[in-house]
Image 1 (tube, rainbow, N blue to C red):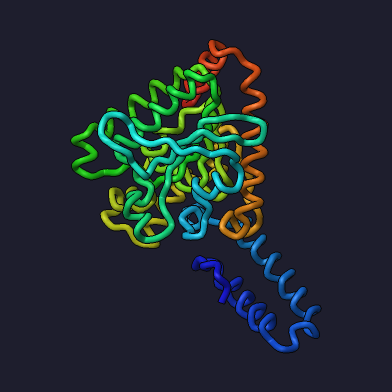
Image 2: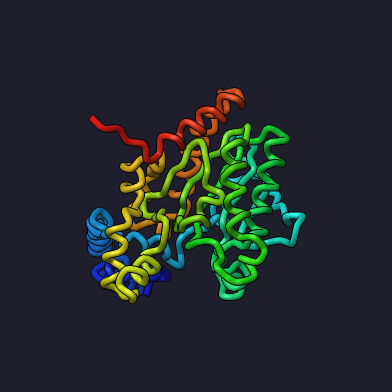
Length: 320
């Protein structure tokens, strides 16, 4: 079978991939080239149809795909001269937050993102992308360093939420996130953010206050995960209640754009970022370079004022 892990709604694609693989391994594969090409075209058309009609719960599943590119993958695919920075100078170094100097296109930046890990050992070490307070304090320390040197800040958001454990609360989880929200709103350098996978609640917001915020088209961004919402509303989280919760939360990229919570949706290639990581990285890089080039034209005081105005407008409404 294909190395790509298929999601439940992709069963028809799984069957076609199996046929394609069997024909490719056949001794007469060369003679069957026309049939192979036809099967590949059918597979691609089916993928396009499936991914055009994803439900919100399917979007959450795609965002959690084990093969989906993470912050470390985007560093490898679109950054040059990356130098990782560690520690918060308070408690320790949280591996769930990745920070470092990098070049993206023509821009020198400070890049900050969530790190989930790929192997079992890495996932456990990174708390599956759920940062502790020292992770958010590390991020803020590096943001202040970037501000000192006049470097733009790029943040990549991919977390189910901040770590909810007792020790994290004892070390000031809520205070660390709240401080980041306040200080990011005051930074005198451009801040550009993108939700590349999961955008869970305060864990995402802790590095998500930006001049420009985007989402990949198969990412989700919400105040709570569908499972958490289902457990509160229906006292149980299963496929039915999770799907209901996902639909009610308006967590997709299109929903967030329509409600004014983000500024752009970056379309993923057909079949999702996990099938085309290089092309997804190229699209993300193009958007980042475009936004940074635009924002660097503004003087620091204008950046702060525009950022303030942007967030004051969220949720505002008038009566006729």
